Length: 238
Image (cartoon, rainbow, N blue to C red; front, side):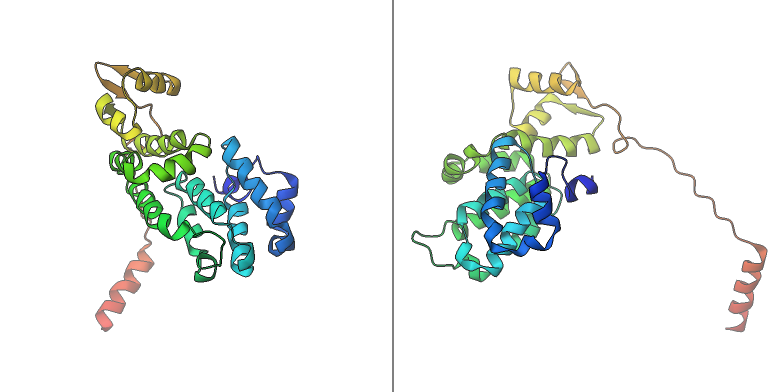
């Protein structure tokens, strides 16, 4: 997993050269990296290090700052929870970029608290609360102007919930899973079937995996007699 995070298999050779070489700090390459971000938005691919390189270029070159790019990077990073991608991205947003002079008002400061709340809910596995906030009238602007452009955003969020479910449950009620995924009825049944899981009498069985199986662990200590005598002698001397 760490290897695919550092170098995703979908990363193009040109982007690999930019991300891994000294050219990652060349401001003339920011357009290439931004185009690559929009490719990720359209294709459901994801490349954290390439996106962080954009934010780093914005730090060094505030005149390049594009708030829509920043928001799209944060939206993509939301779907990687519990990985630290979102917080890594936030850490590269300094005052220079956020307060950069723009022809129109910068939407980032207004959206940032909301995006942080969404990330916090996902990180804490509060999935019903996430969907309630995300579907609220308060976030209509975010949905209509940003996440609608991010292909598969809601399905990617559901995969965050599925990772948590697979690591926690062996059986889960359909009602509870529905609240985690914001799916009901035939949509939920189709999702469960696509996963290859069994649902019977309103209960879904989660296939065994290393995270949801309890196994006894036997720990054996090998202590030599010479070590014990040294310990006793040390205690006696004190």
